[in-house]
Amino acid sequence: MTPLGQLLIERIREGGPISVADYMAECLLNPVHGYYTTRDPFGVAGDFTTAPEISQMFGELVGLALAQAWIDQETPAPFVLAELGPGRGTLMADMLRATQGVPGFHAVAKVVLVEASPALRRVQQARLARFETNVVWVDTVEDLPDTPLFLIANEFLDALPIRQFQLGAEGWRERLVGLAEGKLAFGLSDTLAQVPDTPSFTGAPEGAVVEHCAAARFTVSAVAARIARHGGLGLLIDYGGWRSLGDTLQALRRHTFDDPLAHPGEADLTAHVEFEALTGFIPHFYTTQGEFLHRLGIAARAERLARNLTGAALESHLAAFRRLTHPEEMGSLFRVLALTRAAAPPPPGFDP
Ligand code: SAH
Image 1 (cartoon, helix red, strand yellow):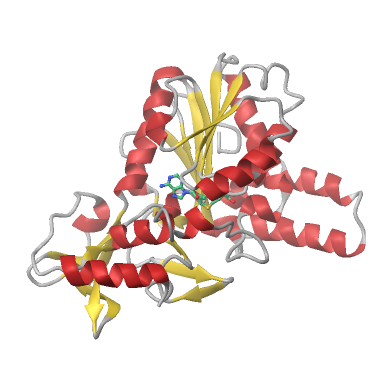
Image 2: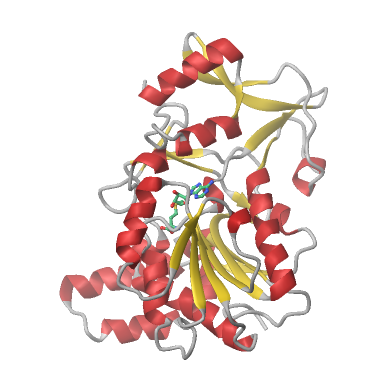
């Protein structure tokens, strides 16, 4: 068992089973042993790869989409250009590079990065040092300034802790992490649980497991509140669906699936994002990553970049294009939610 696993076993032995959300939060962000707090998990040598690490085109197009929205909203100044969970800083670096030529954009932008991991903050700082824009780091979305807000979050919501509930004959019980024969094991709460009043819960059949991510709702509300007051655009891109019914908790370690209880702190833990549960009455647009990138002109950009490439470099560029956009790859598995203002026109990348 990992060092964090030992600590969790002791904690559960003394205090009883913990929620899946508590387990996930400890695994990802424990200050000493957490997955994100202690390492840079991205890339070929790491545990998984994300869209901005696959190709520069992703960050370029996202950056230009946000800049176009800023122009469409009559260039509010000053404004905040924010990213939630910036990982290695690759996405923000590509966004800043691609928008350097947008008149006035950088001059009035304040870049704010929401990042919980000290290790990744250092990687981001090194990555963004060459840009002249003012960059600051904050701990949570609540710390985002109350100004016009143009925001991107890629694979952030899926890392937020979820609770899981299961419907039995008598009602809902919470799925918990406890002990069986001295090892971590899933179980159900002794008492019945109160569950949220969302469509996934109200329509569930007996036996169903349904997830709830309070932190994702909180995040979306905080972003939407700022946009409602001052304008802006929030782009949230993630693995998931409009409604995701079932147990979607998954662990990824060295590019292969792992048992979520097997290596606490040493595997990435994520859950599918249920977009319907996030939106409520918030004005929004929603599409697939493939549609979004095509509408923003990824085919033309890919072709332009391909002109300077040959051999293996060209092949890997074409593979990256396919991976980001093809319906059998990230193109339809990943979804884009745009948070806007009431009666705002569709943002760049969405259906008119
Ligand atoms: N957006 C990046 C990285 C995604 S991984 C990319 O696309 O490559 C998730 C990121 O969110 C990491 O940077 C992680 O440290 C950060 N993170 C996870 N949970 C967080 C939380 N609760 N608050 C702030 N940052 C968090």
